[in-house]
Image 1 (cartoon, rainbow, N blue to C red):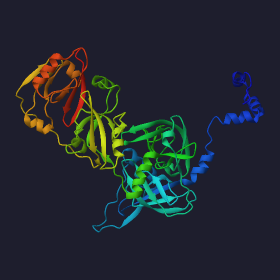
Image 2: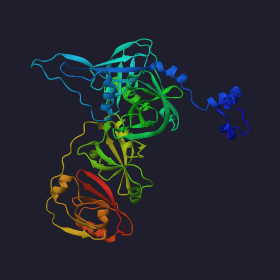
Image 3: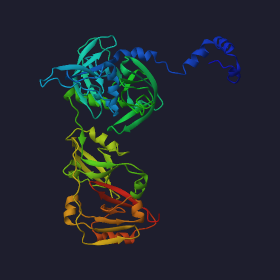
Length: 487
């Protein structure tokens, strides 16, 4: 690159015409070097563009129902996906009691891409959700009626198939090589505008949202709008690294935050959809919460890691394996649990029926357990515990701000605990820690408590100058609190 001494300092003061003449006179290599500073997506568009498809869906409705017009469908897809209030779509009043014939009306639009030469196309599950018919349009304007192979709502991945020749499948990239700050590109049909190209950078990896705890999304600032859903996220090597799935928006439009499903996760889902038409995931039946830095220090952990078990489902694999509320799950099947959100993803990837290893920390001691993974099922509604019975004995731990009482045998059976004490009143330090009447204390300072007597003995010898971890049960959940007596 040719450098001109002092050019950067005085170029701003030059008249526009003179500056243009000087720039035009610069050597060609200097101009080309400047151009190389920014990415050129033209080759990528030519390479990947033919593999991107437009998807439109139809739904069968009664002819008496007033459906949204074609111009409204793109926005309705956005409302459905991102939980915004749906606009009112009036329905025609029935003219008679006779059943009306069904009509096919447009339901939504989206994007997808060719995954294999035999016609398999990947897209989002929400793009085809509720559709009676799916149509795929290629960039050469050929349109095909697609067969739905399968869809997985948990990952928002779907697989459809068309009978066509001359297809160009995408190249799948290695998500592990993707770096934050790397340039990426999207191709899709925002608001129905086919083959629209947008670009940006990777903003973050391993990003979880409220919609799912199974997918570590790729976050980008690529402009994604309704209709882009299901389209590819492409790196500078022309490889697909993600499926564009969600946006974060308060206004209904693009705001610089978009989320894509990593292709390694998507491919695992597609392989199951392709072979069996559905996805099976593992489960062990525990409720979990994050481990804070303060709690980790109190429990003697080297760092804030693992998943805190807040509840164990009766009869579930974890229950049979001996997992208890208050355990910190540190490893599963040999894989470390860095964050609590890692656990459902790691367990979910394991084939149901597989025997797996489990490392937990329980009151300062690591334990190795064995668990047989079951298949995930619909969430169950857990009944609330009945009102507590009268307690035979009450005592106060004044230094901690706690008044506790014995648990009756029926309460122990109902809560499925061997012991513990019930909180009757809180004050000062215990109140600041978040404890309240009705909580059941199971352990303090990593020591299990089975009775009021044990509670009194433990309180008497505790170091009141340090934070004390308290494992307690509230309703169906078990969690930790840190009582700081000196505060």
